[in-house]
Length: 263
Image (cartoon, rainbow, N blue to C red; front, side, top):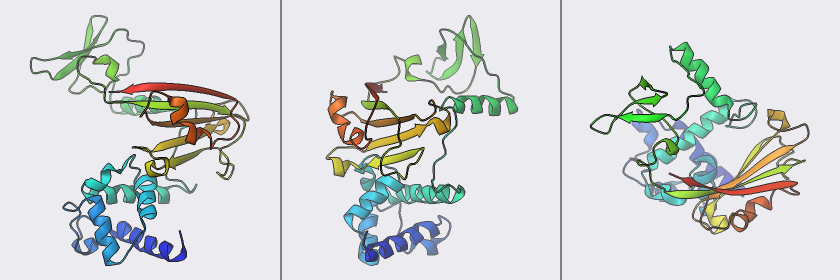
């Protein structure tokens, strides 16, 4: 951004930061439920912000974390709230990032859930084979059966593979898993980083994401880094489709490509 664009962006960020659903004064006369993201951007541009298209693209994809431009046709309130969440997350931690990542990988998340669940009286059952979700006459989930026993419940959260007759395929994700001996170039030698490539810059319909973690997170041997390049698959050739992201990684020792169905 140029000097004047930084000033305009700062004013817009202050507007977002001060926005409060319960304080009409902070709305500056805009009903964000009635305006789409694009309309709001145009109105704010005309009034005092005048943000450039590239700045709006950056804000929408790198701060509000929308994976495509569909948010521009939706009510602007969600767009503003996503930006507020990013800003508040950035202020919460001292490391200069809005993200946190667990040591030992994402397997720590279900373990954390199990511990918290136990505190509130939950029961955790491991190694239960052939789980089947039970439904009542109205098609509402009532429990899960395994080995002749049924655990009753009001709600089921599960992988789509448990409900093959109740899900439909809605797309595919292309992913490259890369093993390296160095951090992603131009990321200040960071042990972990996320890089977002907005769709417009790639001529795609959705964004591409680069994520890197390393031995510092106890997910790789000493001196090794693991990078993931992923995107909504728009072709059947992940090697070609993910090339813009893989090219940013520098030398790669091992790379694995795969596509995964989304349901």
